[in-house]
Length: 107
Image 1 (cartoon, rainbow, N blue to C red):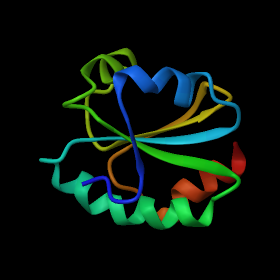
Image 2: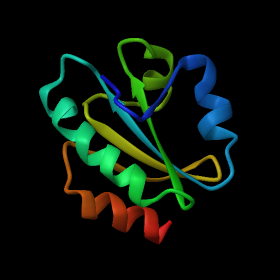
Image 3: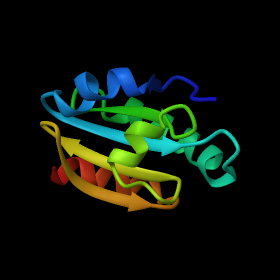
């Protein structure tokens, strides 16, 4: 269900996000979550707009319970913006694309 967004695993999260240089927007979601599914097209469109500035990736909390737990995720969708491996912003629930874009631009 992740569409064209790159899906991370517990094994790849560290190297793809925590050790990454630059900006990474992480969508923590689950396939049974209605709001998560509604957010996916927004994030896919955003990913196309921020190419070269940021990466947009997905983490299925059902498959990546270790990652979700280590990030303290208790509600989904949760979108976390990382810069150079550090959390910068956290947004819970669906937000308009402009909110994510503004967060990326200010990072």
